[in-house]
Image (cartoon, rainbow, N blue to C red; front, side, top):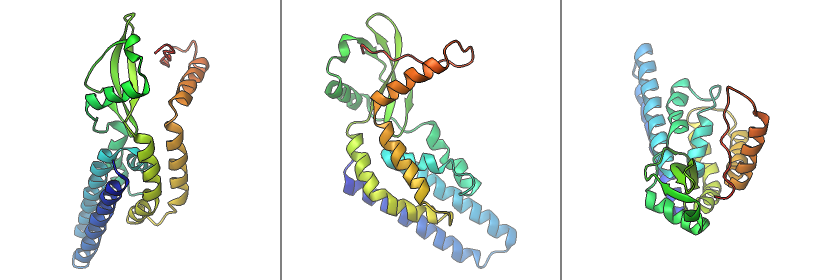
Length: 223
């Protein structure tokens, strides 16, 4: 979670992928057409898998950048975006004890309204994870908890990530990384604001009221 540790991890990732690309380019000089193409695609997939593994463990802005890049079908090779999309589905959850400590620190009275939480996360993403819970009145709920210290981790990431991920991005495409980065930065800071997210949920519930096709979960204000 330290800024230096995360910088070193990202720098190592960029270095390993850069070396892999350089070696593949050397071998491609002595390969024929079909064989060259197959090996290039295999190398792209291996490097995309490295990105998914490292960014998934780092979470925060690092993982969010990976998620955003997975949407860039017109910028990145399809083999790369196909692998990166796994970051959209599920990230490795962190231990339940750490999440309970976070609840105790941020919402000291949570046990007055929440009777119990399931230890196993039902979903994990870049800045938080979700646990099933039961309120004191018996209602079943989803409890979304931010990772401990994720706000400071993200701010540290934003200092370090632009240069490193621009280099990583350049290994796969010549497209301008600037607009992608600006969108990631702004949306990531916005996502940290769970009060704003609650307001968005309320607004969406109003917009879809009466729909038989879309169900919007309610916000439990007392919790």
